[in-house]
Length: 281
Image (cartoon, rainbow, N blue to C red; front, top):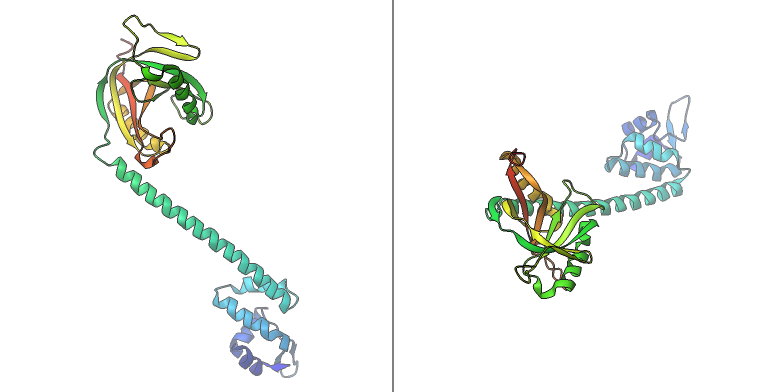
């Protein structure tokens, strides 16, 4: 049994601190002499006192430490608890490092995307588009399924294909699983009498031209929303009415074998437009 002064030397805690811990119910003396008021501490409390000191150094509050000690019967229970806490902290630290890496990736990606969007080479433009003949496969599902339509057209028309693949979007909004779109390829007409027709589920027809607002998008398809934001703002500012379907022309994208770098993909968004009210007249 140690008197409070002796216990102070053993634990490195001042007498004033030990009295404060007693008042707070954090570290109670084993025995208090009723006549003298002297406090006495057991040898088994030395380790507890040292752990309290270390937890305080880690900025644990007195209330937190009190809750920890209240659920431990002896030093061995306390050490087991601290071991579990350390493991939990390590897991949290690993999660924090993963989040920090992910945030760094997002920051770099956003900065790069903003830089690309502000590139003078990727501004909204207006131009006239001539009509041209296409072979198209109308589909419903995910946009990523369009490759099946392009493959079907390629197998059916082969050498008649004469341009970049494009997608016609019939929905006014983004849809995740039930989008209405048409995978198309420009094709050469066999002759002047070649008429619109269909070959199984492949439609062959002339795609109309007209006044078009366009924007060349550089980057992954997942980032197309940024370019749609710019082109739609342009259309609204000028009071144009969009003629459905809108178009995406895939100037540079993944190859048949190699996916390539999505940062270098080039997609031209095309929207045929008229002045508002002109269609009704």
